[in-house]
Length: 518
Image 1 (cartoon, rainbow, N blue to C red):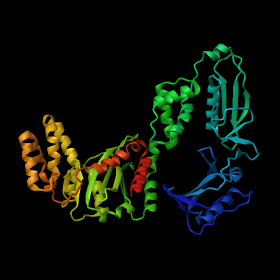
Image 2: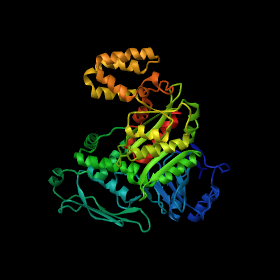
Image 3: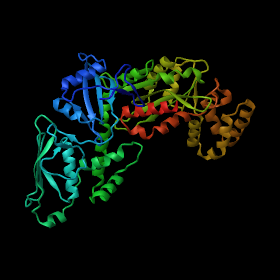
Image 4: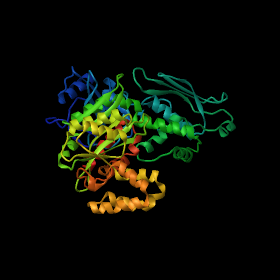
């Protein structure tokens, strides 16, 4: 085995100094001895932490766990394959470190059992014979579904449980039958009997509508759904299945297959919320000094998360303290709202200094978010908060930051004017933007008088909003170029597709984006 590297999501770095380049073991090593050697090399206390070892065979995305003597023998055949060793703390099962082992060999090698028989791991395997051994039942089901479609017939499962898998042709006049069973004490399935002969009339097969199962379609569509940015619709899936196999499927089956494929690739959305405590622990471990807080309800359900990572947090004191905040709705299974706070530097770069996920935008949420923001960043001279005219934000800023003014985004304010005074919007557009960006009071007064001549209702509306909120010349602090909330809208736009992911995957996409920008 090769020496370990810690995978932190963005790059690989040595797991610990002082590790040897290789862990040398005998080909007759036992399972207990292998685990003991790994824990010794990584300096892990076996009495306090649990080790789970697994490896990946090239061409197969599933992790194969090493749990017994047979698994060790299988794994020893794979010099050149990638494996993963995860160190878990026993009490809370929090991942402390992820160690990956990889050698230089890239040539594919077959997976063999203890007797030297090949174990089939490819779900697209098409040559089915008696005596073949499959990695697990799921692989066997996928292979048989593809086999039936390629040979243009339908079957049904006469028996399907943890120990056996028996298929028969749908016609009673046909002797076609397939039998497989599980090897004792393993997940391997072996083909015991296969009579690949059709005695039914040819018309029974010729006029039978081929059926592609949801599981088969999901397996076929999954590779095209790995990249969440790729748009692959139900109509695309229907067309792909038709072109590849000549089989028609309806929209509902395509939708169910897509949902199952996404679940296979990314897991269930609810599971991600159960992993939030572990995720927060990992963030604090990777970014010491960060201010990360999670709030749960009385029945231990996730409600709020606030993240201020140390690398971004440390830059705040060097930037003009004009903080722009906004929220964007998540479109995953459990919805919610993504909130962020960002600042702008003189070179035109965006620095997101705090972000989080909450259930909805309300007074309680924004109070909790700004209280954590104040703990992480305190209060600076000439600081202000810019946002749309969300009532909760305006109210909470005045409570949490009584000495910090809240300023309005001039674009959102103008959209309100357009909504309420449609007849005047075309004539007032250029005048409005010239007025709010004016640096001198006499210049502002000139445009202000023009607004009154065109529509007195607009003049009254803007006056009620407060000059200090939107006019640069009346601003209580120097807001510079930060007249709008465009910088947070840019963040929301970049993360638009990612907002469909599970919560942890979405937060990881946000973290990687902010790290890339800075």
